[in-house]
Length: 411
Ligand SMILES: [Zn+2]
Image: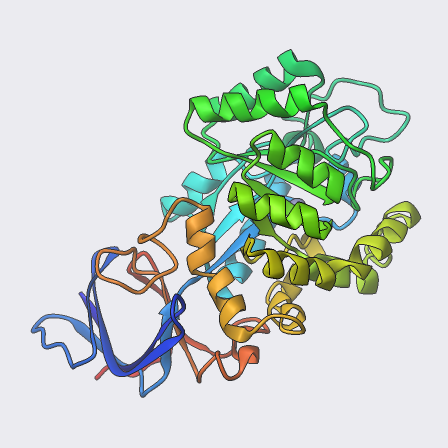
């Protein structure tokens, strides 16, 4: 058992701070949370010295295997190197306090199990397997001279991307991801930044194809999330039963209202555009992509305002490719231009857990929950920069009851 004592407990659901709190962890779960000292004989007792204890962070949009800003460079990468680089990226996420991440395309059940079984340090993964999109769409970054059907085990680009056309192929592709243990299904329903050939405003997949994906996912009790920018693309997806919209930069007020009415989540990823604008060219991103990035970046903050006004639940996302991933926690700073610190912390804890179907398990410090804990050197509600950088201000990082980092003294 591990006891964290003398802490200030931050409840992201309410914003309440409780001083002199204690959290007792047994095995991988929280056993007791108290506003008074807890007395146990045989626990390792750590003195938080009044620092803030809060749930581990959840990033609902990452790509642990997309380790190149220029996606097509993955074509020259073998799966072994892809995995090794992914391991380094995941360790860095855990260093920043992200104990859970949702991979929205690329990561497979093997890497999820590798982390779960303790072979690699990293956040708990929820995976989509291959993101599924149409020929010419956002998951099709092939060279124009490459008309071949990919060997999915020959290189990292083919391993991490899925292409399916027509209702039957979409059904088959979704069923295949489900067979491979996907936690959710990712489809591409509009143009994107990283894919060079598709116009941003293109509506990808017919409504029949989108409905087929939603129907097949539901058979396994899973949900569909969709990459979408334009308001029309978002609205079509939500009307077809898509539960989570990724990015959504170009939404308008009626679309935000539709999302709220249908209970859809939004996962904005504003830091990705900031990173691409500043460093995308240096890492080989092409001119077409850099142009598209300007368009979605310009409307990023506005989409947060529209979503908030409509009451859409927003989770924290970053979507940083490869070399840009050290900026992951800068998403806190960007969102703070229009959202409060509490709203942002909530997005990265309770809302993320809700999106993942893990309410009560993750994103909360409560008895029975998985023991994912951070001890922060100060109050992040007052100073959000404490959650930024590379985790410098985190004195303790615990995932499922295991101490990944501890700088607190033993009491
Ligand atoms: Zn993404």
